[in-house]
Image (cartoon, rainbow over all chains, first blue to last red; front, side, top):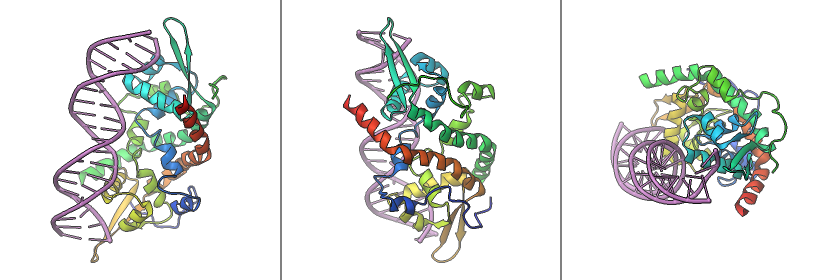
Length: 136
Length: 136
DNA sequence: CTGCATCCCGTCGGATACTG
DNA sequence: CAGTATCCGACGGGATGCAG
C-alpha cells in the first residue's frame, strides 16, 4: 500500500485550517455537530428504509430485522429531533404511528449515497487490507 | 416540519430490500461493515487533516487540537488497518513517523465531502429543529 | 517524539418485563 | 401496535504515568 506521493488532487474538502478560519472551534464545528448525531449504529439504515415511502413502527422493525425496539424508539426520536424525519400518530385503536422523511431528511440521501456506494465498491479492498494488517 | 407527501425522488440509494437481494444479511452488510469503522469521533477529522499532505504524529495532534494522544494513536491504527492511510517510520533520533492517505483513503474524500457540505449547509436548519423539538 | 499501559467513568446498546 | 422502564454488560474515550 504505497503512500501518497504527489500533490493534492482537487479541493474536495476544505482544510481544517479553512474551517477554523470560518469561525471553527472544537465546539462549533459543523462536522462534529451534525455528524455525531447520525454516526450511531442505526440512523443511516433507518433513513435508507424510509427513502421511498413512510413506514410504521412495526414495519421499520421488521425492515431492520435485528434492531431492538428500545434502540428503534430511541434512534427515531433522535432523528426526529434533528428534523430529518416526522412522526404522525393516527388515533385509531390500536394506535398507528407513521414515520416519514422530511424534506431535510430527503436532501441528505444523495450525500449519504456517495459514501454508501464507495463502501460497496471498496468493501473487498478493505477486507484485504484488514487481513494484511492483522497478519503483521 | 411537514412530512413527506409525494412519491420518492430519484433512486439515490438502493432500498434495503435491494441490498438484501444482493446477498445482504445483518452480518454481511457493506454499510455496517465499512461505515462502523469510520463512524467514530475522530476518523473523519483525521482524513480531512491528511487530505493535502502527509503529517507527523505531533502535527496531527496539534491540528486536531483537542484529541488525546491515546485516541490519536488508536484511531490512526484503525484507519491504517482499513487501508485508508499509511504509516512510515523514519529511523532518526528521535524517531519521526509520517502518516499519509493511501489512494484508497484519497478516493473516499469526495464522498465524504458531499456529507460534509450538506452538514455545513444545513447546520442552522438542524439547530432550529432541535430547539423546536426540545421546546415540546 | 512517538507510543503503550493503566485506571476510571460515562454512554451505547441488548434483554426483558410491563402499560395504554 | 407502539411504546416505557429497568437492569446490566461492553465499549469509547479522557487523564496520567512510563518507555524506546
